Length: 270
Picture 1 (cartoon, one colour):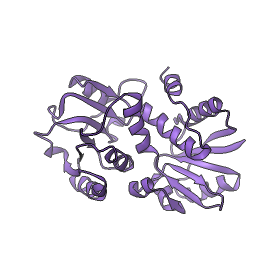
Picture 2 (cartoon, rainbow, N blue to C red):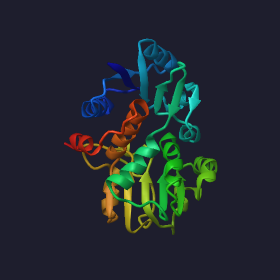
Picture 3 (spheres, rainbow, N blue to C red):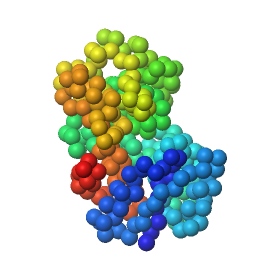
Picture 4 (cartoon, helix red, strand yellow):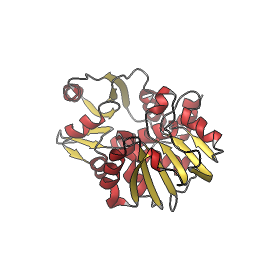
């Protein structure tokens, strides 16, 4: 069996082993997939040990995505832009390649699973941390009319927007500067939802017929999803589909096969 795993801290809650086992079963690929509780003080040692024990690839989750970016011997263009890596692959020359499949997962969930057309749309991205950095370039490649990155600390939003400006129309602002703006899609990439909170944004920012999308997911509607329902969003979605789609993209990088995601999303929902 070929060995893969997800590494993070904490890690018990991760659904990645379940997802990749389902992909392996579906495709008949000889994949064994586990969990690694990463050492907060020595992430590189954990990766080296896994490779020495025959590991071929790792998914990387909080809080190690930026360390994985620094560790990789080579980076894909999307990982380079993101400044964060969520997929490590062992190459034939024993070098480690870093990639970031988060943006591909988000775009595929929105466009393929839910039929949202990003081209020409006005997008609001809430937050300016690693989660948002990982998805901004793939979103811009879908040619939206523009993306506004809004963050509580406005300087972080400006910095992120400036770094992504080569890929499309993007600007940064503080949450308190959103008054009077309207958007067709609002994506929450902040961690506020972990505490059951919603970023402080005006109720008027969602355009009529607009959608809301939370990159977090849970057994119940997230706080931001609930906010979307209150604003009469046409759809208010959580990030479970993104989780499965980014995993499918990792699986494709490792095995050369893109698995079917719909049955796996359905399995996790129930």
